[in-house]
Image (cartoon, rainbow, N blue to C red):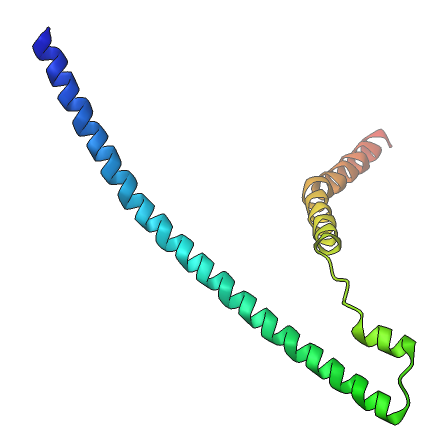
Length: 127
């Protein structure tokens, strides 16, 4: 009995050691993937910030030119400095609508024509 318990203990220790090695190997892969994703995110953030800085500089230059010319009004300044209001949800709603229409087309369109041909054949039989 004591030998069985010792064998079981050794087997469990070996199994645990293998599982830990496998976990470490998989963790390295996930860590590499996470690092690549993080680096890509930082690069994207840097690109967005530099483009936004260029846009702001161009806007400031345009405001300065308009001010020198005496054409700057509060309305024009508001339009130039106002942030664009793009959002995720309207485009998502449009995509869902198109997806729903495509699904309805696939689901109901074949049945629509099939029932019409059955109705036509029934009318011919009755005449």
